[in-house]
Image (tube, rainbow, N blue to C red; front, top):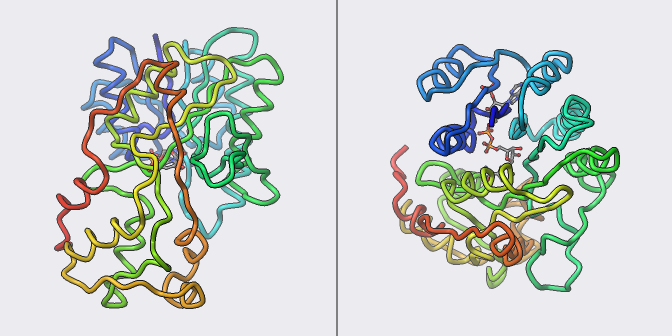
Length: 298
Ligand SMILES: NC(=O)c1ccc[n+]([C@@H]2O[C@H](COP(=O)([O-])OP(=O)(O)OC[C@H]3O[C@@H](n4cnc5c(N)ncnc54)[C@H](OP(=O)(O)O)[C@@H]3O)[C@@H](O)[C@H]2O)c1
């Protein structure tokens, strides 16, 4: 399959491109930069220079592809609403380019966007998403719905905390705060969990979703349903050689700032039906192992 990949130079994309190539696909990777173009060419991908928001150019690349994986996103969270609305337009443009065919469009989303239907139990693939009026990033899934409503073959990949020994998404913020404050804090008993998956397992799941994902499906890229925040903090504390403490909910804002709500939220998610449907099994290192193996000196 000739696969157009946006976000091909990002954390996930840099593992996804070799995964697709190894499986025999041809990859066309989008990037804005010289460094990105060099990395893609080195990996063996065709380079498509451009900005994801140049919708005409984006459609040109998608029209020439047998399938698209959309993993580009601007993670400047001070402008989340703007970038989420841009993402809506990007997904709708990709959907238009693939319209009238069964060529798949796989879109990266997050397990945190699920509106959990089962009380305190982990988020399920069948949970609907929250609305973008409440959570800006839900624009991504609303756009995927719009593509599906027009008959497009769209698959939503809900990602949990994806990790290797160098990247752990929001855990990097916990580490930064701990360094600044001289202690690692969690709220209350710290039993709230973070679903997680190793990046190599995640990109294999993207490939399977591209090759045999059901149109309209949502899949959860989850290897561990919920790693307790307290356990994460204990490992970070050992790595940073800093004390680990429980703080009360009313102290969370002062310690965590913009992360205060998330730091207290349970973000557990299940992948039982994803595993079954796509015959996927996670085999990579777990989150705590990667956190233990991190280099805390920098
Ligand atoms: N990592 C996680 O744990 C996690 C969890 C949940 C959801 N997700 C979602 O998964 C996707 C991939 O995440 P990631 O961690 O790999 O992201 P990342 O490392 O921040 O990479 C972002 C990618 O987006 C591209 N990009 C950003 N703005 C662009 C623009 N205007 N035009 C073209 N390309 C643009 C960048 O390409 P260039 O700079 O080369 O142009 C880069 O390849 C995103 O949708 C993210 O929100 C990730």
